Image (cartoon, rainbow, N blue to C red):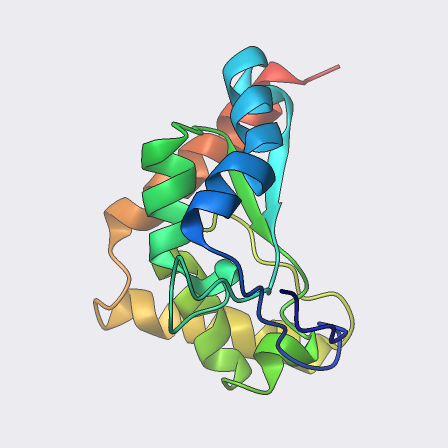
Length: 157
């Protein structure tokens, strides 16, 4: 059952079983990841919450979903990007200076902040402070930088 809410405004929960998600929702991702070069596309992670996979976090901020399912279970080695962090589904949960940190720690490579420059600065400064104080490791940042550079180098025209 889907809680029909616009994630631009509020957090929406997808109330289905893990088995149903595995069989239906993950099937196209599994197929694409196995059949295509992972550097030829990226996965955008939504702000939907899947309690069967993570009771606490929406997908875009979920280590269980990004690292556990996308990276480990589905073996996706390409870029993972969040949906816009200014959307109400997550912006109402955390301040902007924490949203980017949570997304990086969950495993996202690129965080979208699409509208307000002040929000972009807050996300950036939050991530920078988390790197400086050790909440985000240099190795974690380097993982994302390597993936981003790999895609850029492979697609130079």
